Length: 422
Ligand code: NAD
Image (cartoon, rainbow, N blue to C red; front, side, top):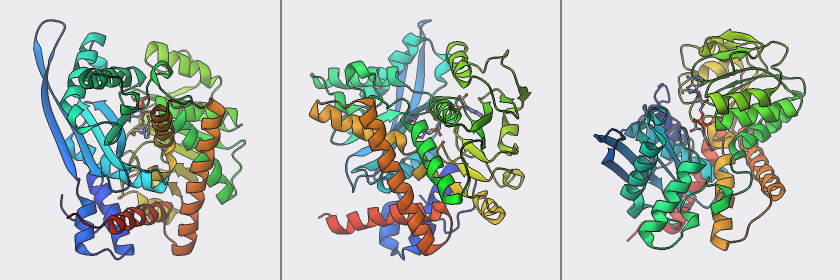
């Protein structure tokens, strides 16, 4: 990877490196430490065949990138999407290192993915692809090494196949090898909702910090999958007005607040799209981003608020549910406009926090109830917010600057404490 001293780009890896080097400047890191942390520790790239239902063979490409394991075994999701490439996974793996450090989880960062459109495969093809990919990365993962979890395009069922594949290859059951599994095989209560719930908790804290009343505030949520749908449901339950939600096809908008968020969730789950009959105006999906709302939650994918559309944003607060939705070209424009951005490495840590709880529960074979999980999540994520806000108060700059200063500083400290082998 190359050194980038300014965070100005639109691509995830440019942004990840740019943000890291800015933090490295603030922390006065020497060139050696910079180079260690700007690079992945290990990069696994696999090419593998899958038997399709019609008898043909198709070849797929997949990755598992280990960015850093200084603070503990590595953790990070697995993404199935046609856009997956090695640079995207590198950026996401690096973000996981910082995310775990911000939340004080005893983990390093990793990420993986397969370049595939999972919706274009039959269930049988998806299972064969998953089990083969799981076997290909099997030697490099495990409860003490690297514990993958769901991300875009993957879910609890895929984690179950992966955990089973890993266990079959080991010869015994290893529930702590993957998180985000179904409850029946060692999954955690509250894991499915964890990322959206964490986005909601950080938004509550950010509103308190800004003196913005969440009750009655207008909210737009981009992306209506795991993160976005749960966040929208929690905002509506807390008395906020969710005026718009979107998926990859379109957005629905009702200035008075969308009615019956649960029905939209149900329809999306059953029909795979936002319900055509639901009351509200239909907008092009990107129009959601520039609606006149108090709070904007981009919870779909990276590089959505860019140098090109940042100037049109009307929200008073942006909370990043997705990874990397605000590019580093957009961030200075938003800063200039006085729009705070609560960064991904703080706002969407709910998923990895409850994945950590799942791993701990699997290792000790002793399970907690949902209330205990949600209470612990709320405490951890709100305390991370307060730590980040305190650094911002001390140093100035954006919430992202403060989160990076904290996270990179913690990984540097751990590296110095362990020393360089041999
Ligand atoms: P998901 O696959 O469940 O949902 C993604 C949603 O985004 C879908 O509704 C899809 O239709 C929509 N979408 C795709 N392109 C869009 C576009 N251009 N405009 C509007 N909507 C679009 O994925 P997810 O798990 O909810 O992940 C969403 C984001 O959150 C990703 O960036 C992911 O890395 C991040 N994230 C997820 C978790 C987790 O636990 N699932 C944890 C941390 C971060």
